[in-house]
Image (cartoon, rainbow, N blue to C red; front, top):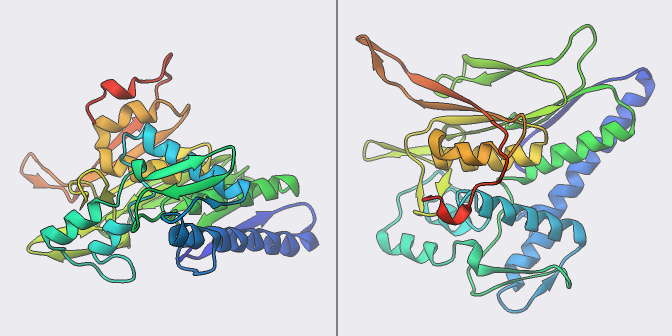
Length: 316
């Protein structure tokens, strides 16, 4: 999944920990082989090759995960979208450093983006596309899923405390390390990577981060990040990074991208659907009292809702 996974374990039997760590990395490998769109022989790559020609049957795990990803698309009003791959290619982020596409290139890419192009058949466990050129990219959510799978494995192995990191973009704190009541995890400054913007405490919850510093380029005086607004076909402007605290890494991995697209105000109804969730929005700096600030932070905490929001009436 194009990142380094790190697992830190504590347990009563030191001799068992290396074997358990090896099992954890094997599980990450398995998920990568299943969901990578870079590996030509992966089941996901087979879907992308054949689903425009005929329905492709996949195993239950991959089908259910893609169905869950599509649910996040609906609940985020299209802000999170696993069909965004053609836009990534058009903007030069797929194996490149980025570039500004022509209007024709962008229009062509947008014709292949959107959940409406994908049909899921739960009874047959098949996936099909309505046109050639549509493709699924699980990179925005698979890291969090792999973290969750590792945490589940560690729980079954009765590991009382662990920190599981997928390249620093999704981190889960299981229990707490010895003589402490939580894992202290730093959130990187969105502009100066050598500094810490904030520190959060993880105990049986995940931190997921999306930021433009991960991959971006500058052209014509504008900075373009790799995080796309699928509804406009363009990189998101006006947000530096988003950090999300959730009970599961999969949810956090999807929500950090969705919140990056939606911004603080429009993210609130979606955030409120996840009990105990928190979001930190790092926005471009402002001037207060004559002093310039590199960035400002908005901290949102989920407020329980009695009824879910009506998606049809939200102007997003």
